Length: 272
Length: 188
Image (tube, rainbow over all chains, first blue to last red; front, side, top):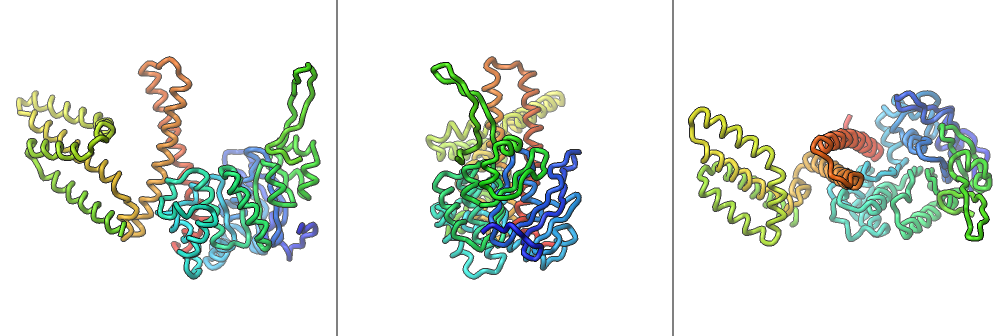
């Protein structure tokens, strides 16, 4: 379902004129405003360095806006807001972020304990059983005793997904989730998200072929971190000029053996 | 069961370190070294290389320093230097064996705090090891003609600086990852 008319009452996550920079002078995000409704699927598209990961960290309350307001279920996501312990726990329980580099979120001695960590903290019954179940779903059951740092890049990515999904969040933030995944794991993720209809998902990617599997609404960021487009994904993908402006597609010269040449449009992944 | 085995091995290693530190007879240390070398079997050359590379710089510096000082003071030095080097090699080989045979994170499961610190350190070490190996490959790949010592030193310095920066970035990312998963929620 696409929430074309999202009222503040419906919005799960709201960005209102948000700007953010890392303190080295430049702004990473500038005047970013959008709403995300419960159960909605939003794909954030943009080139390298356009602020996609920063956007997710702001949504996860890991970074705080320099100006503008980020709200989760109507409450401000700022230092003061997250200082309230109960609210912070509730927020962390209902919003899960899978980092682009999964090493960042793995800090337990074994795969089993890593997955069980979240459910245990949330007081869910039988966290070990849950861990086994999620390890099985993501093809990690034979690694259950291994140390997470000893896994391959793809296995770590699957483990990071299992850790977050085992907590059953209401909002899932995926930062370039398929960067290290093999085709089987990508297929599993797409199927899983398709089945979890209550889950709101915000995914960042440059891969346009994948984008169509992960959402119906697109937020396209310019390289200066401003919103170029917010609307139906299929409309964004059909807008060649938009994709070129956002550096999501490029044209280059093709030379054929018969001497003819022409320019084609290319992107990360073939969405056509 | 595995954790118990790892704990026992860790305790045995700790006891061995204490005992070896109390041995002062070079002959006895030599016998111990021979026994440890024998148990490495076919893996001996690799193990010996790793240990010698790890300790060479410090041991040579300390041994030379002591020997020069002792000669100037007209004191005997050979036995001390022999004992020092034998002890360090024995301890290093024993520690290498322990690090290969013991899963430390299991052995420390009696203390979640220690275990947590160890896992963090292991993760960082592994990531930086990979990066250092990539640096070495990159350096070799981009320098088809071997560089003079000065060039190699400058390259090593830049790599060390990059590793430091990367370690800092890793630490920051890890803190965010832990924060995101609620690790700090009960700690303030």
